Length: 338
Image (cartoon, rainbow, N blue to C red; front, side, top):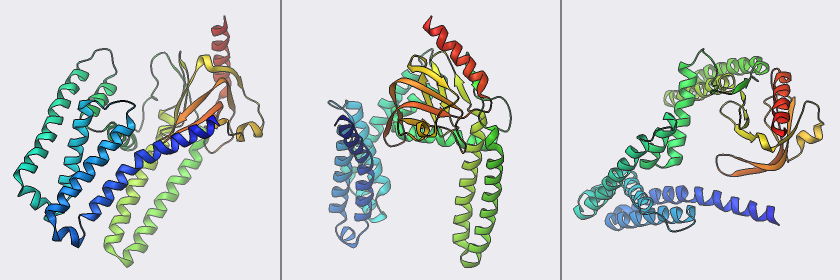
């Protein structure tokens, strides 16, 4: 019963995150209809009301209590900016011809930016926090946090794909790294070759039909190829980590799951296929059979982009050389017990 209730709550949370985008998109299509062109002022007011109401309801749904004033101002500023940029030229002309409404929307946007800039400067002045985290927190005061995280992820992938061609892996201080990318190298090389061939074939075939379509496909294929290169390189630069707080089971950009040290009760290198296929096991091995299994004394949850998955009480993954990892983890577990 509890599991069903949790699943229902997660489903409603996903709907609450997706529904505002769908409603705003449908409203943007509605103001481009002939009826909206015939009554531009009415269409503008309805568009502004619908976007503002949708963002405010989404804010209320995401907060457990009364929303903060800064969050309300941010939602209104987002609604004003969305209407300003998302309106067709005829609706925007009516907006510019209505100085009271235009001035109010601009004042809301500038007020949000000014208030957020003050909070961002306070975040940047904090001492002891990681520099990247400070900048992300500061940017999240001005822009939606989800958009900031997505932008950081995009820049990280592009930077790794285009500019990181050597050097050590990303290993923090007081952490031991264990690689898992060597068994993936032949398959990743083959995948890159096939992707390059696919890009060339698409460009040649589509080019005979439409030059514009060929250019669009070429751009999309190139972007996908860059992302694929970044993902493959992340397997080497983001190894599995053993730290004082636990095991960071990583799979490139795809996963970074922390397993606390006090939650691990056993580590095994031999296990059955039924255990790996069990829904209570999180299998983090990539394109291969795992060779390490961590058994936990309590269920943990893995969060994906849209919802929280889990729980799992075992996690399996594959290392290039599992023996040193198992010896060190067993020693850590024994040292913890004493």
